[in-house]
Length: 157
Image (cartoon, rainbow, N blue to C red; front, top):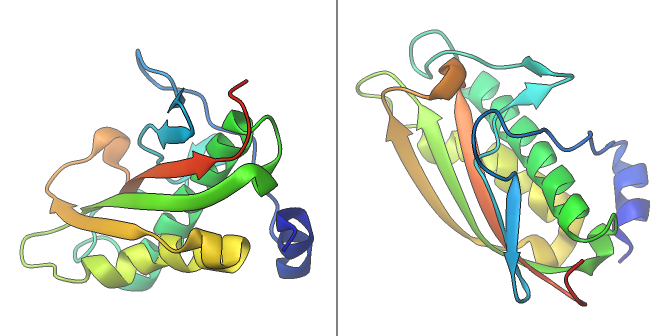
């Protein structure tokens, strides 16, 4: 399965990889593994989804926020893979942090926005272990933040 063909068939465009907003790198590679830094729901340089799930935002808005985070994570993986997402051998783990009000329990449904996108774009290579945590505050008031660990084919560079 060619990832670029799949993206075109799904009508998905990978955005430019967002830059870091503090003193860190957007991704790091050791051996075959790539670890992304926390990916926020940036779209065209703007925080597309801000606020708390269960207060200012609905589960559907959270799902879309997680999907946007996943697009940004794919952009980071693409950068780490020298521009070729076909070099992603598999996703290993997705960690998701949901900015939520007290009592909110829809974390899995929100993070399905990221998982469903990864599975659609990468097929069986997108299957992953996942962590879903609710937090009371988030950098820049982001609704969701995800990190991804992936295994790449080929040499670093």
